[in-house]
Image 1: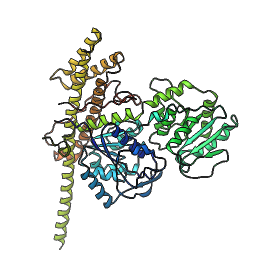
Image 2 (image 1 turned 45 degrees about the vertical axis):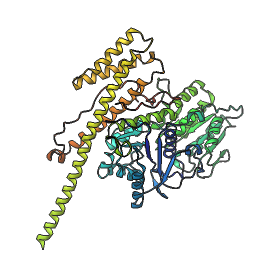
Image 3 (image 1 turned 120 degrees about the horizontal axis):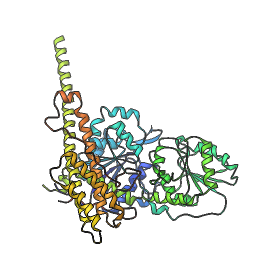
Image 4 (image 1 turned 135 degrees about the vertical axis):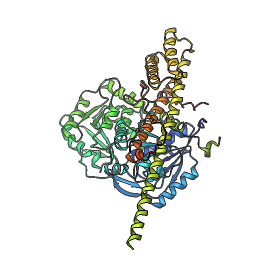
Length: 384
Length: 188
């Protein structure tokens, strides 16, 4: 048996287009950037046109990372939001060509069980495959199919990664596979030490799509009047894609750049994540924690994972029953009335563990483990 | 005419069954191979972990009691020809010992930590492969046609990974945040 070469050529497949921002896309970019810094050679395959100027995506993620596109993606309503995906024989042929030209040591496929280039890549893969499962919610129809047609594809995965315990449970229960839990990463240093305390009125912020019900903005807007009874000068700022009618006390910044997001988080007195369901991973929560903002979040499994303290010190933020404006208001009032700096510091330290330096090195450890279970690839190592 | 149709139908059905059986056999074979290879990887990772633990004994300034504790546990895990059950117990014991002495070690000593993480990941991959192989073997078709051949039935490797594993909340498997630690490439 030969040892894997030190620098890995990693083919990363992202099912969703970079034209639109999203958790999976950001994760893929962060991973590619980490791999590049750690001396590996990532190559990202994704649908759609990729421009570094794409709004909401951090331009520095694109430095020295190879990209390939499978062409324009089709918008499809999927999993409660509009996903832009690829399918069909043309996409399949492009994926196959990318695979054969790439000479990858290892293939890292994200969300393999979606009707997209991820599934096509898994189908065609001859390299060792690491697959990351992002969604914490079983997609019943595709999972049922998984019992039949998709079984063979699922068995081709050499190592599974789940971004949270909840996502892992879905993999175990619905796919009969297991996965190593490795969360999404954040650029911790970008967020830390950006705190700008302001003496005036308290500022509450919300980040996320404004027009997507599952992001829970409606719950927040219903709760704000209750909070304003105690804090009449509360400033409410929302930032995210989409448009919708908003009350006059709510300021909308629209889509904001990564830099503005960091500044906004640094200036906030309370960060509210009122999501209703289907949040695969609380990355916004982690970024807020890294910024040192007190957190109020709905009681979703993935949020609880992130907010769980390892040493029984209680949660790292306030949680409330998802969809309950009264409970949300009560949580915000508790945070504003009794700031808990110790908890905020603990939350910040917890968020540090999610820095890409730690997350990325564990992903590479999984690559190495997966490679140690397959014979050396003759294409790259040319030993034997 | 009817005979021709029946014959055609029989051939089609036979082809479908044949294709299905071939497909199933491929999957069974792949699952068996994966279970074997992941075991080899886990075995190697566990040996490396015990070797790294033994290196602790050579560390300057380590007290003799800790050195003895670690070396006994590591030597027991490295013992050749252990039964499966004894190996599982010895490896678990080593995990517990390493957990106990972990806080006493200098933080710079993360070579051992990365081997522990590697072993933990390898174990998960192996048990995952075993589960896939077993669920295929339990299938009626696979049993009747003996598609698994003479390959021995794989078994999951049950042991305590210790605190390095992702048991409670997320903790980075390799190194601490802020310092990039690349897992050393497999030796030999």
